[in-house]
Length: 630
Image (cartoon, rainbow, N blue to C red; front, top):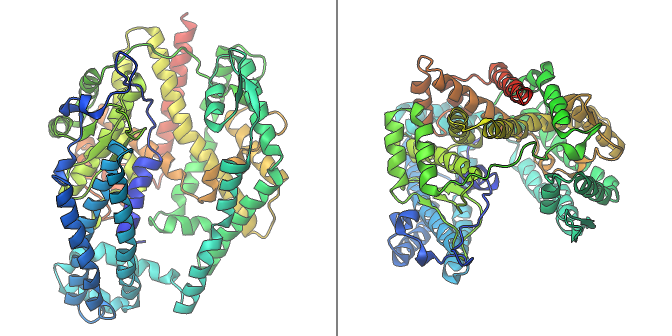
């Protein structure tokens, strides 16, 4: 399905902010104070003046954007008259969208430089409000195109060379027609939309506002209030008593809500089924994958590939149990680090050299553009007082990419630099090659370039490891990355599939069913060495992902595609680098599954997933070998 400009912005945010790597902050001065922005050398700051030299220039474009809104009235009700009229409307929208993107991105990134400055907060609020007016004024475009007879619309495309640029965009609209209802029916669905969010909203209020986890004693016997963030930290504690107490306290809190949470999730799935049936899809899965034009086989083959070879996961569970030296491995033993974290520090400039060396397999042109980006105001490196925490990549169609970091001298930040520069290079090449209408990277493909960079960096670091301890640390880090981004997302996807199919078949969902189903899948994936105690199977009812049906599988497919590409480039397979370079220049001008095929990866087949499983098994075997040498 086609995306409006505001939806594109949301897609970019989803890809690069909502799933961003939150990097630890701590670039403090020697006296412990957080630096002011004025303390940072300009070469470590992004150059937002490349979007607007000053606020006055932003204000000028703001007035242009505002004045453009009435211009669309001349096209309303006339898009089907001729190819020329349709083209004029689409070209006007693109030109105004570019201005709107610049206004939006600049105001938000200026705000992120220092969130204390009210002027930039106000600018961000103003453009959001103006966008609401703009979106309202242009809302007629897609529905009106839908009313044009398919044959007539195709004749428009064939007869006008400039309009043919929009052929994929228009054909996507044609493709969606079979699931567009009558005007009255669409109005009814629109009315239903606000309360269709109710299950998710209720879950959020329980999970974010109402639930209280209670208190636990930390490693130093200090009593602390448990929160989601502290829970994860405590599960990583080397003190098993802390892990056990945190797990008990956390899960007990959810027990009081389990029937309500089960009812919320059941209602959400029923909502999915309602909309799928109303729009004449064969299943919720088909409806969810339709927007990206993804065959359902991609989803089902992914789950089958994992289920057909769970032996490496079971071996890792067994090895984890052995390393932890526990008689029974509990769910609270699953994420505690198995080796001590690296104490080696990585200054930013040193990290740049490491990442640059690691990415040499991507070729001279990539490295040339990569190095230029590093010194051309793409990156805002260091933490300063008032700066937004975390990290992300963003930008606009007619500017270079921008990256926000909060650098700390640890290995995690080295990977973050590689990851976000992967996004940036992808955006950089896409905007060079694609017209505006296709100049963004859909979520299905957006993570491929960033994870490919991480894979190349990991390969480099493993080859350069100084000793066995460092190599084991890197290997276990890689293993946990694959578990989190691949196996866990596939496990979640399988759970989603089962609960949706149950409702689609006319059966009910209860708390007992959800617990049993989640437990069964969890036990299957981790094998006999994991013991799941009573009421430690509530994950299916407390994970927010399940309120947005069938999207987490994209993380797994992106991951497998990226690892496949990286490995073939490292092996110097014929046309591997050439195909990947072509992939980087494609935005949204093809179905995502076809874009990935350009890089030599066919996600309609199980091969990429099988390659990831094979790599995972090899990493586990290597850790075991190194441990046996001790």
